[in-house]
Image (cartoon, rainbow, N blue to C red; front, side):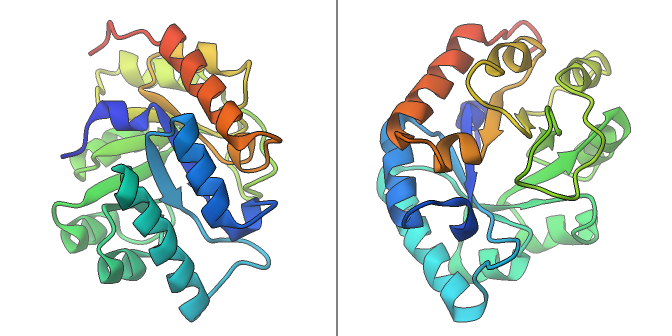
Length: 218
């Protein structure tokens, strides 16, 4: 069963985000305390076909060994075929209602950028929403306008209490405001995948979030 606490440190990664074997990266990140993982194999040079599936199943096995929820970004067919724990989709990744029906009781995360999209995600049965971008990021080129952590506060003020994770340009030193605005967690890519010490970076990010989190809105 999906729980809010699973979002505290949500690691998102694909092969193009790593400086070394992504299997090693994920293993070290888990040692550092990540609480959820999303396989996001996108961008120039990303794997396709059998290679993509093989990496997905390898990373899934690592997550299963450590009790970490394994989510697939966008690729519903892949998620269903390998028995992933869930799917994360963006606003342009297909009809949300159809995808909700396809994945059944699996976890469904939806990217949102404002109160209106968050309300729609709630009605369509999202288990959690990703909100962003919090800050400028080089990882995703087609990002929406950066509105910062204040959008989290706006979503909470609108009475939306879905589990919520902030994403986009988050690194150490940028965690506190996101946590205090009402997020259940932070989602990061490069701050972990390209860190000098992956394990230590993950540990520091989770500690920063936990010491800053405000739970008054629950």
